[in-house]
Length: 435
Image (cartoon, rainbow, N blue to C red):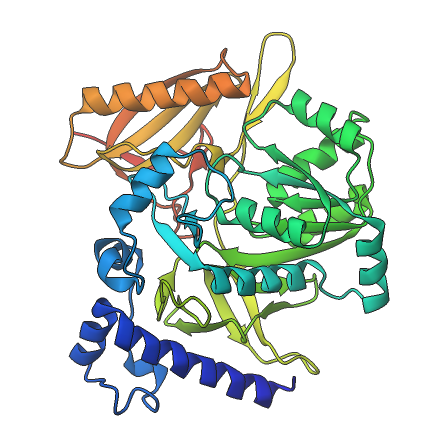
């Protein structure tokens, strides 16, 4: 489509989701009316006239915001807690994705079947971006072998979408979790011999190091990065070591197919979403998820919208910033090294701490710095955090790593970026000590 046609298509879908939300979501009905918008002007009022929401608003009004009558947020929490994480739909029709928030209870994003299929098409389009149809047919006909390397032991959107998408193109697949020991990666990769790699760029970087060390032997026809920002230097490194083109899929739990970056441009999928950038804040309106409409929902990423690329119907984005943290690398007394990925330790569900940060103090030790709210006692929180962390270290084969939990009054952001670092080095302490 030409840009003008995409714009008309986007506007038509936008008005459809706005009307649907007004009619079927009690939260949006009230919010629109408070903003002076009723059904007589909902099809003509500029999007900027509609109220914005954020994650806290979503969590607080979850049951009133969704448009389906047969589920609640409490039901989803029980389902998530009591049911093994897999790709089965809740009640056979709702695909549930949880966010990897840094503290407290996770947020849930619900996709109906139609929305899930639409999103998967966006993911597949991004993964095959730039490939001529002849090459796509050849790739699918040969039966690709795909390795996914990321957080796979929860209802993370990436793992669920990648798994369903791979099923849809008839590919063989293995999933490697970032919490598994590296030796397990080595064994499974050498046995499976994938020709397509998908995963967090920081995890794929570790795979490249294994290849350079001669511990893993493979070459990839395509590398698909997701879940973290991908810098130009790391992209070149992945391409050099693995030999295939690197495509970066841009998505979030709220909308798993936001856009694609092929190394030349970051393009936003305007047929699936509306992205606004106002005073440096990014707002998302999903055009396809009618079960849980997200209208002018604030995303924590930061980007700038730019002029369209000639010949492309999609909006161009530049300066995408997200959370791409350093690894926690450890080494035992025998020279064996392994890591903890930040996303493997983000999912603590402990009542009490508002925020936390990790300070690596040596090759086999770290400090977990917790910012406590007024709820809960330090002793109870410390006991729960310690137990969960020990479980993660044991699963990863890092029982020798020593750690302690300490409480602070406030964790401060990095003054250079304005964002909190999840992991800091010993010479970069940035917190105020409690008391």
